[in-house]
Length: 358
Image 1 (cartoon, rainbow, N blue to C red):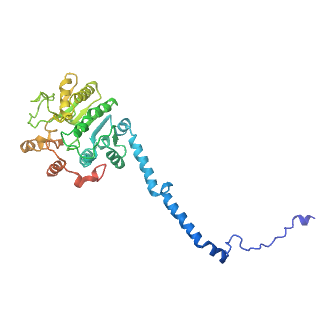
Image 2 (cartoon, rainbow, N blue to C red):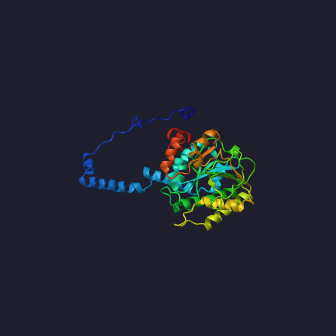
Image 3 (cartoon, helix red, strand yellow):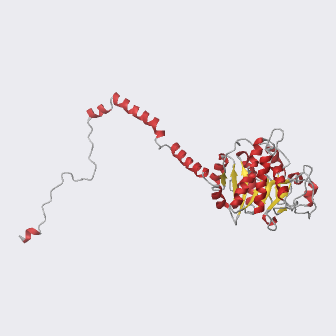
């Protein structure tokens, strides 16, 4: 009895000595011929055709995956606010902005190369005037472009003096005021400019607003830094191309007055206005309420002086900080002039731009 408790139970032989190996498949010739009948083949091809038609709409194609990714990308930047953008790019309480539409992307890149050489590119914010610019910049340089509605029609370059140019530039004071209201210093630049040196050391003192003269008349080396007296048109000729503002009451007052002047002097076919006369009227009318500073002419010359007065350039050689390619109309003419002076940087130095080669 005890022995039977320790006796192994009898093992049953398996009928298949390799139970885990695949069994051979027997093919019934009659069943195979049934599956390959003409009717079944027609049905099979019909199903494949229907699936081929429906497949792109089922969310599995590479195109649909790309479309979904693209939609998410575009939605993210459409909803990107000025507050978020300024918080992202601001450094030491300062932001550098430019306002760009798609036709000006090459000028943006040229300007960015010069800014990068002075190590200030991280604080640059591109205010895009169209979605093409918004997506292009943020695709290559995420977070450095924002679009502030409404979107302007800007598929082609706006000629100076046109209604499109007026609408494009007239939004500038509102953008600047919004940034001041967020508590940041802001420098504005046109993108047909090139930095040769760091401009920030030239922002002496603690003034509300800094700007450069647009007159080609040579000033004394130690000229006054006050707002210049009115010219023949009853106002000064300050350029709205380069402005630095602090978030002060005085600076905000200037911008608010600029906005009012633009509203009072709209563009018409007979009076093809732009934003600069309104800016100068605003400066005149707020001169006693805001602390203003005219930047030194040798460092911040207008294009009418730098590109047209070779004697002055020779006498002030090495003094220039920012060059403005104005006093000339047309993209191709501006590019040629930059090339002639070795200032069109995108041809050989695109890799130095955060955007790379466009």
